[in-house]
Image (cartoon, rainbow, N blue to C red; front, side, top):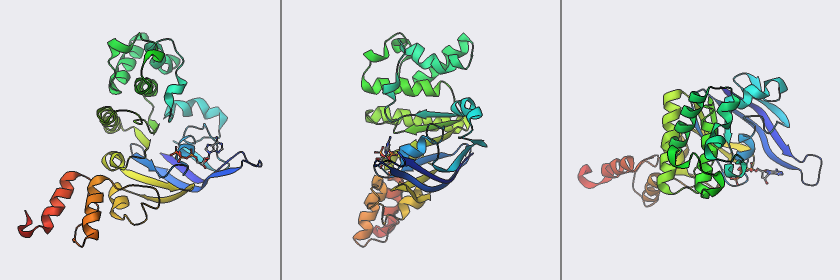
Length: 283
Ligand SMILES: Nc1ncnc2c1ncn2[C@@H]1O[C@H](COP(=O)(O)OP(=O)(O)OP(=O)(O)O)[C@@H](O)[C@H]1O
């Protein structure tokens, strides 16, 4: 369970560059939940994400992860093992000489035996869509940007943390790679009860994978609810910098043209069913 209490974060306090990036955020995330964190550029999503593993500390308020206060220095190691944070540009953090060593870094640090380290590295690489035997001996720097991103993500997955915080993990991947990665993360959440916090600008991904959405706007929590609740009230979403997922957008367009349809359709199947209800004969 993650609890965020009255969290305020100020960058460069007391200087001319002072920026209040989060204001009075209150939030609870249950174990095993998949939460999409959305909002326009600069709304504070990455800043909030970095509070979950103590990389950033509150200027006011507090963040508790399984009862651990992120400000408690004695809990730092346990916190880092509990919350795996994958940055927006994780490829910038690669430093080992080959892919195996890169992904094995976390599990080795945990003192796991060789066989378990290898099992985890293989599984994590395959989860991100990379073939273990092909890439294990390659230098991370010989890979494409998208492949480097997958290696960096695999390095976090191999630790198998109970909480995964992913800052735009699929940015820059092709559509098939994006779908593969997010399907794997969803399957991981469901099979292991892992808590997933996904920062995304892609509302189709949020609608498809998240149990709940939290929308930030100018550093404040603007709306919170299931994807159906968020997209079922489209008024104001555009002003908040969010698109509707395609199936909801089509229905909203039809509604504006006078058709009495629901707008909270999240999949094309649901949209098709809803359109049938207003067609003559219902077919
Ligand atoms: N290191 C920093 N120093 C000073 N200000 C910062 C720093 N990082 C972020 N900010 C400011 O804090 C605010 C929130 O930034 P943040 O990166 O958390 O937004 P975001 O919602 O993640 O944006 P994006 O979608 O573009 O990644 C912005 O006004 C940003 O300019």
